[in-house]
Length: 160
View 1 (cartoon, rainbow, N blue to C red):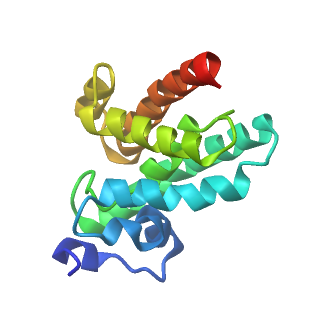
View 2 (cartoon, rainbow, N blue to C red):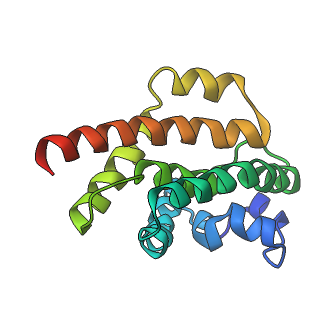
């Protein structure tokens, strides 16, 4: 059953559909994890792009995400609702910048991103508490993605 506040979204509105990760954020159990799972096929679809194009796509997705997440927040009437998962999609993409090919790395990237997104170590927690609205929703996941990216690149260097 969908949470009542999420029923305020109009999934025919592309902004709302993107905000909830094509419906993955409507999950009543672990919507952030479901949003990150929804990011995997999107990542696989664009993973063959040259790294500069991949990064440009993420920058576009981040900037658009500020607007997307704010539109959903306004419709729901709640700040940073867990059902808004566009930020997880972009955060996972950041984690996977220049990742080695293979399912093992997709799983490692997924685990690392979720770890940083859930635990929110400093400075992620600082930004999460102080920056609100669409920018705040996007920013903490961007930073979590950057932490996970750094770990991915270290692991790839040592074991890749």
